[in-house]
Image 1: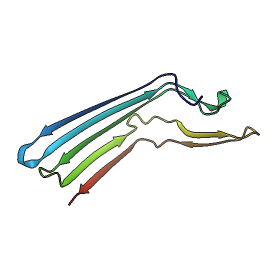
Image 2: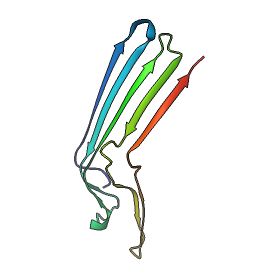
Image 3: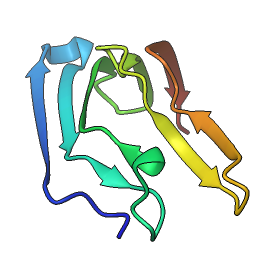
Image 4: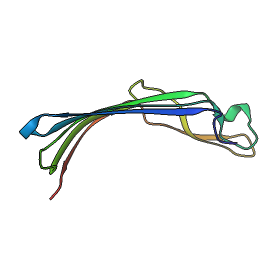
Length: 111
């Protein structure tokens, strides 16, 4: 119950040293999971289709590791799936969806 029959994840990281300017970090990750049900009854209404999620980022780290600037994207294929689904005894459903394709910039300074 609740667990897909199969799932896998691939995470690729690469760091390119740019000398006294720091380093560039590249990341691509892909996570896939088979279909599964969100309720113990395995009702067809609660079945979630198989899904694959692609995320990526490119970051720069200063040579002294005090600065990190990263541009990232999540759910790059813009997959749509229910993140939470509740079916009450009267068969009324309450659902929320996972985030759509999102992009962002993260800037971190450490002392």
